[in-house]
Amino acid sequence: MTQDLQAARTCLAQQAGLRITELACCQDHRSFRTAATGQPDGAVLVVSLIRSGCLVLRSGDREDLVDPTTGFLLRCGDDAAVARLARAPDLSTVLQFHQDVHGECPGAAASRVLPVDARQDLAHRRLVAACRAGAEPFEVAERANRLVAGLTCAVREPARAATAVAHRRLAHRACAALIDGPPNLGLEELGRQLGCSPFHLSRVFRAVTGRTLTGYRNQLRVRAVVEELGGGRPLRELAATHGFADQAHLTRVFRQYAGELPKVVRATLRRADSPAGTEQESSTP
Image (cartoon, rainbow, N blue to C red; front, side):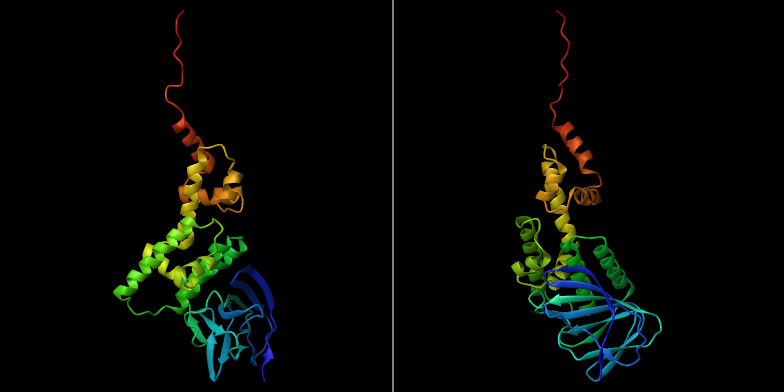
């Protein structure tokens, strides 16, 4: 009979449809203990990525090794348990997704171990770093969805022509929705508007456009700010209008995408807009 797994949990991010937790366990237990597979708030898909340590995952009548080169995916209600093998402390990142956001989760047909290559591990670490740095919920959600989509959809058949057309249309509709939508539109809400999961939307958008949804959204916001920089509105007001957390956030994103500070661009635009030849020639009496 399995016992519940006791561990220290630190919430890294919490938003509609997504919770990211850091799970640390230093207990020396070689016997199997129940692994958490969901929460009362409706999480139905759990992806656990191992950062250190070594576990054996038992799901049904199968046992798999889980270490820093792997992770595992569970559905809410799965009969799963873990046991420790290594003496090193276990540290993992747990991503929990909500049913109304991920009704058609890829890979949800069965619990399974997910191979994690070096690039995916780096994406995982960057997700954790973004959470700790207080990144915007939209960016955190896209990073999480893109990471899980890459892990669960690593092997795919070549897309048919009709599928490619459908993907292009979905990417185009996503662009239009981001242009027309409010600056604080979330990734989950965007997926609902377009009738697909954030998993699918994030993967398709990058495949079609070559850039991330977050990158495209930031490009739109920077251009919208540039459009108004020639006026007299304070930067803090522009930040609030265009969905930035504050003026410092606006400045940081603006510099990342435009290569200059907004106040420098404002000064440049004002000089360009001033009428030429404003200096009056002196006249002799």
